[in-house]
Length: 358
Ligand SMILES: Cc1ncc(COP(=O)(O)O)c(C=O)c1O
Image (cartoon, rainbow, N blue to C red):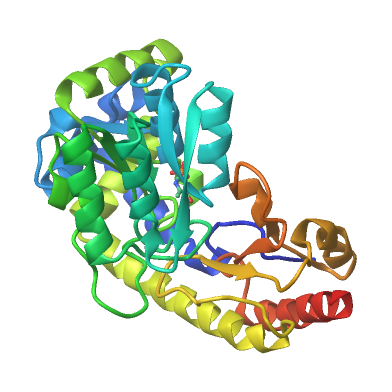
């Protein structure tokens, strides 16, 4: 079975030796803090390092067991059931699932090739449907692969300012860029009193570490820290301390460069395999990250074809999981977790399945 379904780094991207070395070094340097119950906000040296990295102070940083947890804490403590939350359509399937599970009212904002359709958001706001929070994935979007253009970033930040809503910029993929120049973040553009920022070491280092973080105003970080403390006392400090050593010793950037190279060849292999897809299939290969987003032609259904593809030995995520409803003709292909050779074979299999269904 070749899986294009998992948005996880390939085994070659996971450097066990690096993590082992840094975990041992961290434990030798700071055993008592690491092995005791820690603080709800995360391993203090990592909070301080992240604060410096983002040009802010440690009281604005919460380190969580993966960044999804920070998002869930926000749904529980910053928002209330019935609040309006703006979500890109499509969006990260778990972000949508959690918003639904927490009883949010959802404002879907359609995606275009250069990011979310800010005109739809502007029209909703003008009509009185102002979200409390807009959740956006700015770079190499999961699942759409897109990056928000500079113009749209400016408009989004201006709308947030005008209508008083918050932006949550969730950016786990931004540093995995294959080509082109990085754009300023919404957090930099809109400032810390309009934009919260979250990211993760899951894609740049290893998802099994479960280390992610949120940057938000200090009073909100205080509230979320209390929630974290009430939920699990403190997040796991050993992986956070190992991540801290990676960062502090200047080993994160080389690892990101290595992972980016591994992902670039995978993106290229999958882009090459697009020639097997039926005529009329739409896909713009991304400039970074883990995902390719496909729109099948006509009335073809990626949902209905998933069992057929599974039978043929290849799986993907049906795009409909990333929308409130509809869009059965879309699918997400993750090239991140498999080898270039598997990608070549998987795309041939998928092409056979889809072309037979036209
Ligand atoms: C956009 C986005 N945010 C958050 C996450 C979750 O990351 P973590 O492993 O840090 O919880 C993912 C994982 O796929 C993601 O794609």
